[in-house]
Image (cartoon, rainbow, N blue to C red):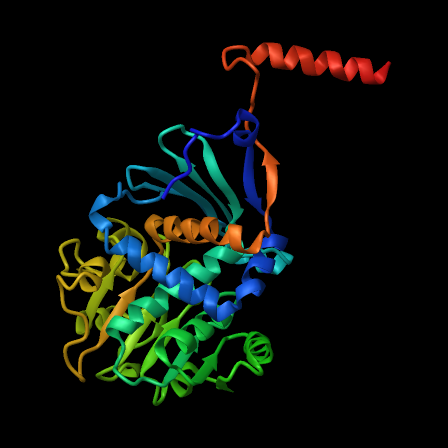
Length: 361
């Protein structure tokens, strides 16, 4: 569904719905976090089921020693969407967010944007929704226990998504910073999740059917060693999401069936960095569409090597756009020039200047 110019007064087109951080939080609160996560997942699955209609390319990065800024564009032929996002792990030392973002959804028939929104909170929500959606197809049936290694800003959303969409009831948490685990436990109090904090990752993953790794440091790390991972588990590896950043020992990958969003991107940014360029993987859209198998045995190790892809953000933008008429939590942003004559942009500037001078007089 797209917004068309026909039937709208030009003045209407000059104003773009804008969702600020404050309004995003109000939109989430209006329907509840878990309903928001489930709604996002539905939209993501819808777009993955029409995967072949999308223009797909790896995201466009600008790297620095401290982190990365990326643009993530895609189009389905009718609507264009993009996200601006950064990843700077050291930001937390200065009281700043590791990841921030904003996004735009536009009508290809006019080129006019139809939504401008914050995507710092929205990215955290869509990442969690996407993880849980993959786990619905890949995790052991009846799984109730998840270990989460890395208890930063993304962890709360991951836990709630797996609770509402997969049926997880127990969380085994570990972070190198114990204060992060305490914060996670405090935030999830009253959520219906039974959360226990552990002093080592080895203790945290014991008995877990699902292991989520979501650490922040930009380095080749080994959060999970090969001997820590037994048969039958599902690994949700979402922390290794840029070149030079991994979380799993290479031998774990060699023992696992690996599922990815877009191979061309994951081979550069995900855990797949560690393997040969032709190492076999399965694309998630094929699993959702019934064209490839997900979990096929109780002993199988399934691994979602998640790095985030533009189609997921496109789906999240669609979801928010469709939610706004129901919640009303947005502003009208005067973003687009709207002269009386489309060819007379300068005349509009002149008239505005004259009006301003008159007011001053």
